[in-house]
Length: 134
Figure 1 (tube, rainbow, N blue to C red):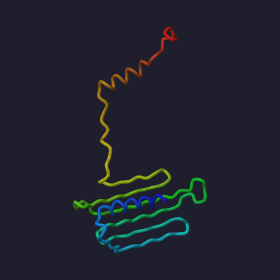
Figure 2 (cartoon, helix red, strand yellow):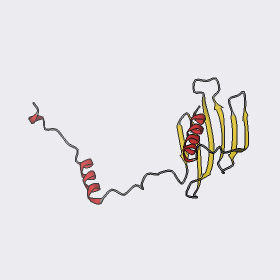
Figure 3 (cartoon, helix red, strand yellow):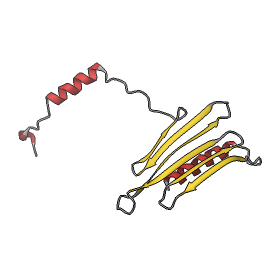
Figure 4 (tube, rainbow, N blue to C red):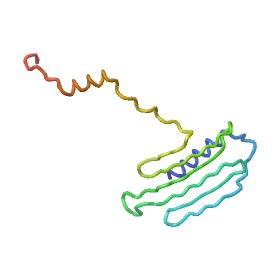
């Protein structure tokens, strides 16, 4: 299921960039869907988009049964940049990798003055004065 969602999202994103009046031919396509729940699919379009994806069903028939899907896609952005996207989706969520994806900024060190204050707080815990209780 996760693989289908990923694939549909990818297709929708790429489809928005293309002219909807010009159909793009599929020049190669292969797929294999097995009764055990595993699958493999690969296709390529005339404008250079390639997608490859495979999935397997893990822990068949058990409470923690889950599908694991691994795939990749490649295309050329409108500015000519080659884009490669990879993914792994399973019961733990999805992980996407690609140089075009945003990443968090690098972790900056804690300034020395703030670290000293945190250290002081850690060594001098607050003790409530029982005389001032209501």
